[in-house]
Image 1: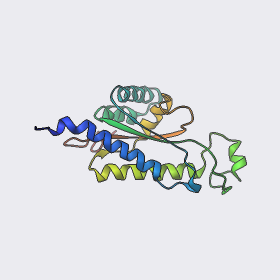
Image 2: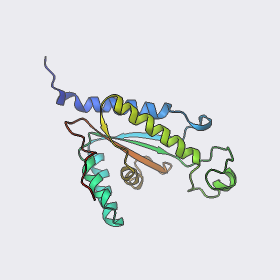
Image 3: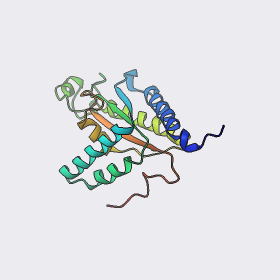
Length: 178
């Protein structure tokens, strides 16, 4: 039996995406509090993301959303990594408020540790992709579209997307300049 690479590519990328989710989930978190929401988007859902990104780009006058929308159509999977916005109870004031109770009166304001944990999780995830030589790029634009589509539910407040590709040339770099 001979199995060509192109016949294994999709399942290989999904396996890497699954490992990326595991790396994000097990990444260190402040006080051990896990506020992450994680998922993988494929097939028609990538097209929905792309369409929403075009809509946002046109609506808000953000040209890079249009470019990114085209880029992700070359992805076989997109990893979504999000955090909910919940105070971690350290009363540190890093969020700009005097303490967690004051921050909690402003429910949209993220706890600094939510953001820090999100960043560490993203770094852990993309390191897995890099270890497997899978082309990827962290994109805020994907996260905004995923949020508007409520792909991860209403609790997921801050979302980033990481498109994955295994081709001869990464579609996520050396992109058109705006």
